[in-house]
Amino acid sequence: MSSSKFNFKIHVIFLVASLARFEPSLGLYLGQRHVNIVNKLENHETLMIHCWQNSDDMGKRYLKYDEEFQSAFIDLFTFQHVNIECDMEFKDGDMTRRGHFLVYDSSHDVRTRECYKWCNWSVGTYGLYAYDEVDHKWDYEIPWPSNNRF
Image (cartoon, rainbow, N blue to C red; front, side, top):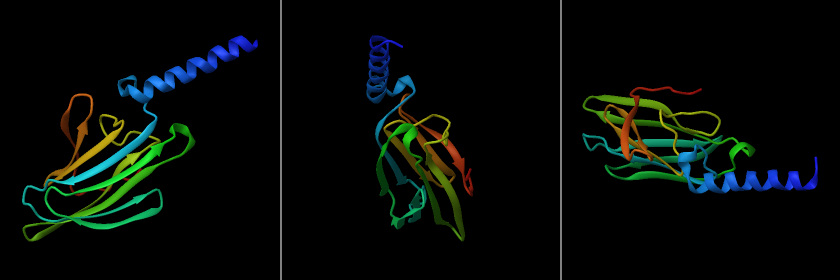
């Protein structure tokens, strides 16, 4: 392969990667991702959330209504595998609801619609809702209880 053809291919790859970084609708996003989980329990109960990124314990937190858990990381596309999973529980009257939720995985889709820069989740009494960055709406995704590990 000639040097000019090789250089052209490299330029095309960098152009596509640059566009994808700034334009998620192309179906690819390289850059810093944010995973946010907000307590929107209709009964205003405290949400216990305990998360792990890969095998690193991110700690246990108790979120009051409207408080959120946040995590940010650089997504290097195929060069690393990132997953974030969380145990969650809250009181629903006399019953305690518990679930284990995979909220982000770089190797496959966890949600109906892929998240790009912002992977926003809202926790409600009926389950988790994912924010769709393209349509700007919340979609019901995962019911309680859950054990959606892959």
